[in-house]
Length: 284
Image (tube, rainbow, N blue to C red; front, side):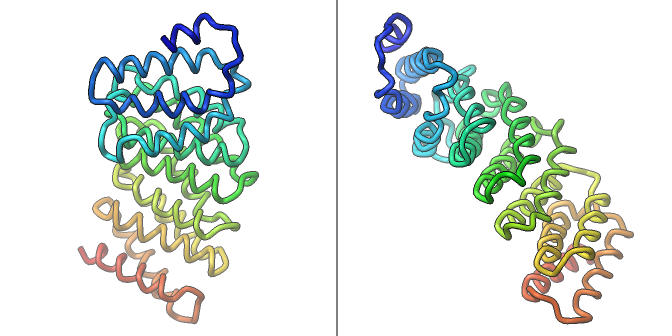
């Protein structure tokens, strides 16, 4: 009945849009096929009835509802229908590419939430639609606050954790995005999240040595606070891609460790942890 209303009515129902987002997305977690299918169809018709220039205010309530629907690692039945998440995609992409900073942040988190709650084959058709804009916004990250950058890096890392095969065509761009973010001068949290994402990428990337060389260069050519983040990223790369690390790269890592302890640096505790992890993989 609500879908019919959206298709035929010219009445202004904009005051109720957030309420319907909450109701319909929540009902997509109903175990009954008839219920979550009807919820999907109603949500699809509803979103299509909203003018494109008015979808961005729906981003934050949409993400909050997705986050509270189901649980990470448990497929939401309605999301896992064929094209089940398609009604939400234009809202999320609109918020990510042209919304406010808060809307961009929540849109990025929404992508990660959907990846964690949607069956792999159902999320596959939307991987390009999500990954491309995430990378594009990330490359413009100098204009965004750390919270937006962290949300984007979190979403990309979630995709690498959950659906690495589907994002494989984006590995080169992801590598550049993570390495660039490891050197972010504005935020330690951004650098740490990027280091974790780079480690996740290296689990599925056979060519590890060029990344190691680049990270070692970053560690040697930056001030201690940023250099420490490059070393942390190096440790994550070694930990996740250790079997693909060549002998020359191991030697360069050993030299970096040796040089790091010749004189006092900031963040020695972090360096000690990195030292232990690199040595354990080198000896292995």
